[in-house]
Length: 115
Image (tube, one colour):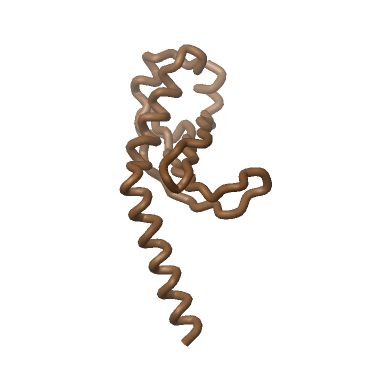
């Protein structure tokens, strides 16, 4: 009975998290953040290349305990594609109310990174 109750509570938690992600438009906001990042003059890869980047949703993760971040947050992760090849990833961190607390873009393709 306890295991069944726990499963029901977890199902409710996941449903609530999915609703938060949808209400906060986390995927579309993360894509907008990634596009803003790669279009900046400081990014270091020519816009003729970054204009061809495609951003695809990869995952949402809930972090409820962290070494030095004292609040719970959702991490939305995107895969960065160039001509259908994965070249990096973007991570968008928001509070449960949608406020952005951090983001990170990483190019993992060495040829692209050092071009």
